[in-house]
Figure (cartoon, rainbow, N blue to C red):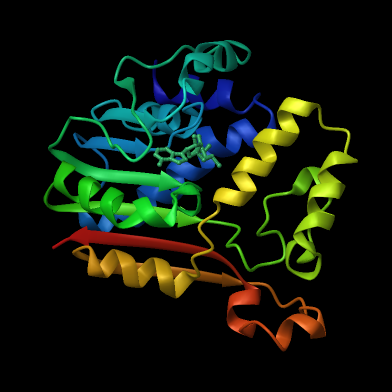
Length: 257
Ligand SMILES: C[S@@+](CC[C@H](N)C(=O)[O-])C[C@H]1O[C@@H](n2cnc3c(N)ncnc32)[C@H](O)[C@@H]1O
């Protein structure tokens, strides 16, 4: 499918799908452009979820080979999602399902992309996963990582379903958070999934991520840190660092040493 046809179909997609198919691949392309770009590259989307971003990268650069890596079977839902806007998965896209803590067997990647995933990798697995990812990159290969919302930021709980957008996960007792979840409109399965996801957030701050990645043998090429200017509740400022409470997003482009 040529680029114009893809763009005109993607334009008809709902905003969140359009963002993953068009906007995010555009951001990643812009970040890696000074370091060789996407053309002809072997790219891993680590923690790809349904695989919309991986598909967007594959559509954006037909000469690249994109492999989405996931611990769930979510990518099996991608054809149905794309079909709704008249698209089919591109031929240069494939997926691998891996066990938690694993990163797949393939190596020789030029670029590993990870969008909203690293906050979900548990502390006791994080360093090993970063070391494994490094072995999958070619020497000098690139790692693009984005995390938002960071745990200590206003929406860091990921409990949008509970309306937690103002640090409630830090101002309420854990038992109260659980009560809010049980009183929500979510069904029993969704509640357990949300609770498990919340309990497993690794709580790393922006400096924690950067420190761990540089310790794992990556050098930072570009960094973006986004902060809110919203004022945290006064009670939190006696217990937590203001910078951590106000930092919502970290984006890093790193090179394997
Ligand atoms: C918030 S979703 C983001 C999905 C996708 N990157 C996107 O932006 O649409 C987080 C994803 O990370 C995956 N994930 C969590 N821990 C992982 C791990 N240790 N290895 C690989 N994927 C993981 C989850 O299954 C989930 O699909």
